[in-house]
Image (cartoon, rainbow, N blue to C red; front, side):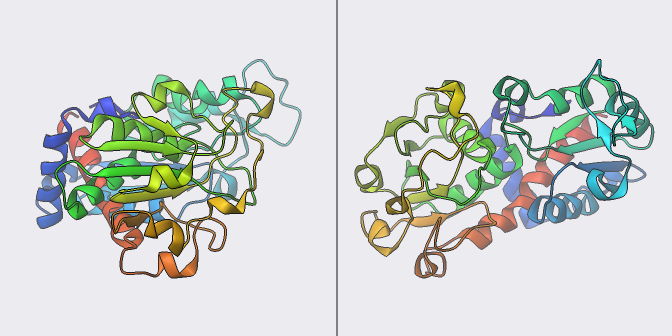
Amino acid sequence: MRTFINVEDIGDLSKALAEAQEIKNERFKYQHLGKNKTLMMIFFNNSLRTRLSTQKAAMNLGMNVIVLDVNAGAWKLETERGVIMDGDKSEHLLEAIPVMGCYCDLIGVRSFAGLTDREYDYAETVLQQFIKYSGKPVFAMETATVHPLQAFADLITIEEYKKVERPKVVLTWAPHCRSLPQAVPNSFAQWMNAADVDFVITHPEGYELDPKFIGNARVEYDQRKAFEGADFIYAKNWSNPGVTNLQDYGKITSKDMAWTVDTEHMSWTNNGKFMHCLPVRRGLIVTDDVIESENSIVIPEAANREISASVVIKRMLERL
């Protein structure tokens, strides 16, 4: 595995899940793979779970780790070609990337969507430059459009907590005070479509995700109908994807608080488990009583980020 961006990169999901369980049972089993190898983690945006879990996974595998926060610990980087660099950006990404590649064996990149230019974001411009110019295997630690380490951890968690062979999993939009990327819901949809689950997406009209991520999922605009009989509720806000109206891309076109997941919402489910990638805005995405309930599995879900990262890094190390 030279790159890890989409669900197709992981291959057979059943084998990946079995490997995740193996690593969870014996986290230091493959330390020899990372001996004298270095992972460079590059952050263009803030992080808590991604940074800690990925670094822990690499250390479990015996790796050295270099963490670069571009906004706090490096020259400001220009990402556009053909510009006159007479502003506050001192270095171009096209020189910085191959230099970074000189100092490591693997690269993890985290870079959010700008939410102003849909074409630029969905082309994954920054990530693709790392893949093209670093000379090293690259994996996504969340990008403009996807967050595969999170989605893989979500699938591991569902596998651990499901009570029926083919559970009903619902991805529900919820209100937020800021414009957020579509990366988490995009990847969650992509991975659920590849898994053996009954997958439903519910959101206000106009918030349709890109068709390539919706796949074969059922889209239900009535949140109550979507929740009925659900085994898992995955709540997440995303800004308008601009699919039905490009001018709305990245904007907040609904603040309907009726979509906030509360006890009444969860009563419509089949005693469903509540999931969220964190961090979560209480009172907007979910109420205190739901996220603090015994059916909330947000902490085990976050813990599985270490496991998903371990599987991905292990597979990359095996192919060096």
